[in-house]
Amino acid sequence: MHYLALLTGNEGETVPQPGTAEFDAEVEQYAAFDARVAEVIAGGAALYPSEAAVTVRRNGAETLVTDGPFAEHAEVVGGFYVFEVADLDAAIDLARQLPAVATGSVELRPLAQWLPHDEPGPDWWMALLWEQADSTLTPGTPEWDTAVAEHERFGARAGAVLRGGGALHPPTTATTVRGADGPPLLTDGPFTETAEVVCGLYLFTAPDRRAATEIAATIPIAPGGGTELRQVVDLAA
Picture 1 (spheres, rainbow, N blue to C red):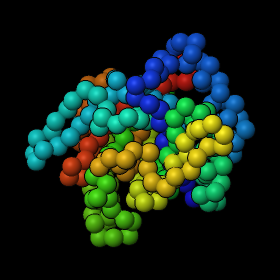
Picture 2 (picture 1 turned 90 degrees about the vertical axis):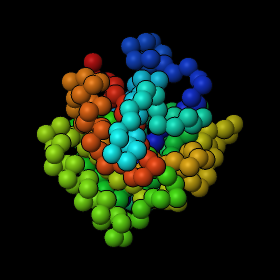
Picture 3 (picture 1 turned 90 degrees about the horizontal axis):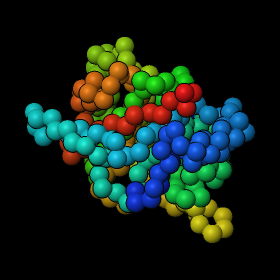
């Protein structure tokens, strides 16, 4: 089973910037984690801070592009992992070991579909797909199949630049692991207590922000939802 682990932190806190000593120290912590559990890591990436995000929404036939993350949440996504493990308990055990738990939280969600990816490069971008919590789709339903067909058409158009992606089970399947004094705390549900939840993601390549935004603008969006575009950090640089 594949589980998506969304690493989140507080929006108001100072985030280490790539290229700084603080960021390098954080990367070393994650490298040590990767080395311990390499056999179960099926994907992942670090993201540039949300202040550099671009959001795409659709209002009827009009596509709206704005700077900043999809929603004004107290916590924002700073990166992700995908774990291939037997069950939720194994995924929780891994999440408890992540450095993100000490200062933020890790949201675990089972993936209904996962397309593995190679090592991210300098021209990689991530599109995080958000939708209204009360309109999320359940795998195996006619509505889900219709949405999958839309995404397959997008994949056929953008196939040359796509590098990976996945679709999530509904937010009712989420488990959040949050840091505290003592053992990490487990709660049911996603990391945000708002009307919007993450429903999937794409990874793709683009030469610059403008080209990446143009690609993100063609990704199918559910009514009331949106696409949050974030640049992936090239950790090999």
